[in-house]
Image (cartoon, rainbow, N blue to C red; front, side, top):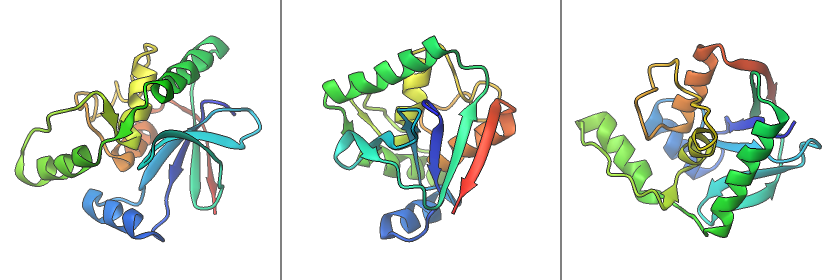
Length: 165
């Protein structure tokens, strides 16, 4: 369904293996479904914020509880706006997050660029929904896809979850 979150649990690409190793988790990416046919996703990639076909292999689909149709439409409009702004992927932030984990260096955020999990958090927050408000990650601006997934699973704010292989 539209606005379901799609987490990637693959370890096949080199980038996925690097992300999984650095984050000490098994979730390397997150995107959002943009239609009810579950055929298209919007995601932050190395090419910026883009629309791609939904490949169901090695995915976990998560539906957030109690989203109204109006909230879903507003969230998707916020995601579309990032495309019109030509928002780019924030390669530097990902590595800065890791430095923070290891050495306590506080990342300086560039709000004109996103990593995938930051993109998802941002479009929900712009619409008054903090996906991590009831979690240990609630005070973090920059979370990894694995932390977003763990935060949602532990929050109790999930209506539906399906693992696809």
